[in-house]
Image 1 (cartoon, rainbow, N blue to C red):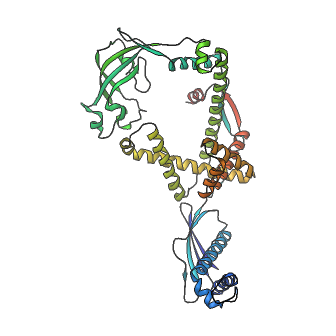
Image 2 (cartoon, rainbow, N blue to C red):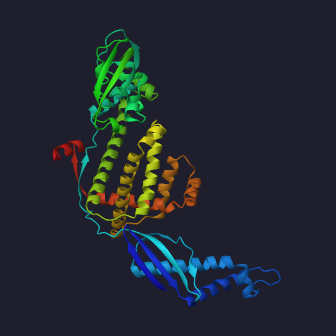
Length: 445
């Protein structure tokens, strides 16, 4: 075969192949022989029909099989010739058979990036402590108290810890916020019957605390500067004027922490049992946080340790999937389609950034897996599929069939490989236990 390979930027290559006429004729003859042996043609015994009749009857099928065989063989030879790491092959145009009997075709390849694997052994990482203190358990009990609190209307000034049920409108530069920024403003479009706790609110600093001292029926104008991390980017750092009316003042009554309270949450159990359950849950949460923190630091160090191009076709595909997931989560959290559309550019930017990080990390970890001869057994894949089916509340057999139909079994295998590889890198890391990662970051600054 006459093969030329033109490598291009963004991990792509164009392969042009010319298959000699004698090769084309030989393969066609072999394929025709198989059809002649098995074909059932009226008027002829099986395997006895003339070749010209077989070829005429099955011309389309024979040609498709011939082209498929020669394309696969040509691409395989090109890959071996250039020692390419190929992710996907696409032949978009029909192969052409010239008058000399030679077959010409062109294929577009998506290639895995070429790079030198960064250092991955003995990385220095921090891990937050996972010990659960009595104070941690007490804080969780306080949160439970808040969830089961009862509220009583009061005819007095609001004080710290009370709740105010309010109606409010919000304006920016004298206009309703949505009009001022020319897009949906969500919470800032105003609310009726909104519950605000009389405390310093990190989401809307100054709103709850600004109502202290008011009574039911009172009105107040609050001018608040929106924080720099406010979800709606158009109003960050700007002053919003809130016209608030207190409809009802409520006092919070917390339940007593005793065996009776515990039995409501865990039937036939007392306070000591409840504390034990809480401690166990907190240990699981802290262990997960520590594990996630280790992985995040490993991923960051691996990614900063090397730079290389990514296949743009994969970036686009991954970006699209990320964007769809982000939109689904936004809808589940109550965001309107209008507001989602307004933030389309921000969603797309975030989706692409995450796509590039995910792909780069996967390529690095795959190289590490190859270097360390990390492999995935069929049993590993089955265990992961069983866990996925259980989470999806779907029978395992049906879940496997759905994966097979979608051609996604290999994706599961790759996911398991990536997981095993990151576990290997974490295991080989030098881990320092710290009180909290936030404290460590502040010290570094």
